[in-house]
Image (cartoon, rainbow over all chains, first blue to last red; front, side, top):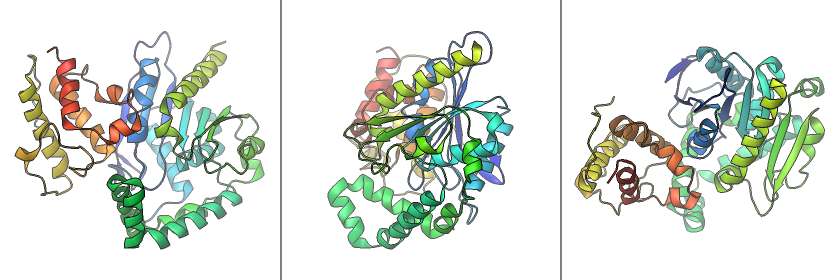
Length: 265
Length: 105
């Protein structure tokens, strides 16, 4: 636990195993919004990344997992500030690789726009930068969640369709929404301008499910950014990370290794 | 928060289950959950559906296991090799299997 911008923050740092000469690459995992936590990464990608000779850092965003839940402070910019402060506190000042799932990818893009010198590369999983189109979609989604999730018939439907486990997750998400300003804060950005997007010059790998949140236009993120490539996983919805973690793992390891070689050359 | 003592000899299956009961009690305790009788936790108890715990709690149990048995008992690395359904349907008995296999029985 570390105090980050006044919020007690839970993180897990896995040191690189058998790192060769020099400082090992650092891979920072940023999870998604709602009922997500660092567990989505810690129990899937962190161990193999550390075994491959990279330092793996995963943390719980404010109000998620084991991190404290302040009543307000949920704009994208607040999450960017938290990430910078966490890296500073852990003395990780060299450029890091950011792997962001869903909203975690949005945080990664905004972090890279604000602190380009601190980012070596981004793997974005079912995520997009904080543009106006994103804010509109996000505002709509969060509004629907707010309307639906409190209803007992919704929870009954979730239980019937996905099981008791998911119904419990939905209840937890509702508690988060009820206790904080997250619904109004998140879509307020600050949003990225065209110039901001152009400043994200690091290599980006955008991993999507063909039935995920960007199925209507899978190359939209690639078009927005200077150096982005897209991988689409067939037969997969938004839950790319947890349902296809072996595929994602291979892509992340290959991406970070290729950038590290390029940096060393 | 931890009162876990390091274990040096290879533990029996029953001893591992007992250790796990204590660790689960610590994890449940922080939720103020008073719903589970420790003696009712068996190898057939389901981590998520019976105990109402989440994957973030598996991270906590993993840390307690490493503290007790050593870093080579790496639950996260073990779970990273499983599919999502297997993690969501995790039985306590499978955690016992894992510890026993890693500690040399």
